[in-house]
Length: 105
Image 1 (tube, rainbow, N blue to C red):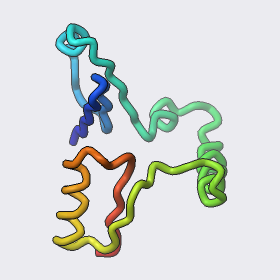
Image 2 (image 1 turned 90 degrees about the vertical axis):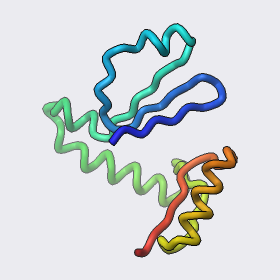
Image 3 (image 1 turned 135 degrees about the vertical axis):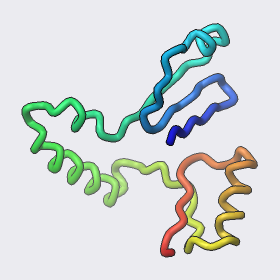
C-alpha cells in the first residue's frame, strides 16, 4: 500500500515502497518528493546491524523522557465508529499536525 501526503506547499511524502519510475510530472510542477522507509538500515544490512537494537532502545528512551518529541498529535481512544469519524474529520479539516492514534480494539 502506498500512502502519499501532499501539503499546501507542493511537497509530497511517500510512505512504504511505491514503484514510481516517472518523476517528470512532479518535476514540471516544482513538487518536491520525499520518501521514508522505516527499515532502510536493515535493507542495506550494514556490518553493525546488531547495533540497530541499541539505536532503537536509545531513541525510545529519549522519547519516553520527552527529549525527542514524537509526531503524536491526538489520542482518540478506542477504535470504534465514532472515534474513526472524529479522526477522519480532523484529517479532512487540514488542522491535524501529526499522528492520530486510535487504540484498544
